[in-house]
Amino acid sequence: MEAVPTLTVRVPFVIRRRGGRKLVIAPDGTVAAPCRHHVDNAMVKALARAFRWREMLENGAYATVGEIAAAEKINPSYVSRVLRLTLLAPETVESILDGLQPAEMTLAVLMEPFPIPWREQELIAGPLSRHSFSRSALVDP
Image (cartoon, rainbow, N blue to C red; front, top):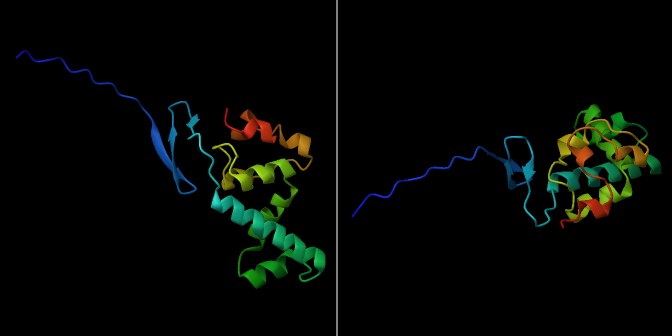
């Protein structure tokens, strides 16, 4: 029997864990996201905290971010960064809760400063600039 030549194909990629799931990252940095929807529990938890803390401030349960931080035994700057999530466009919040956010949208990305006007949020530089924050752009084709 004659030996059949072997062909080896090497495909450079990186596998990263994000939100408890594995993502394939291509050499150019694009993410090959799975087609199914995935609720990122870290983002949902941060949103829940943000809206709960905002409610506490509005109701007068706490007067300052510092008081919330002391009660929760966490850093006041973290409380401030999480509270900013209440300024996200409603469509963005809904897409995160539904698990329809782009794979590039992580809690770390959301914790970075972003513009307050909702229309300007659609123009955010970085990984989110490839996606509109509108629900229609976040649904898999």
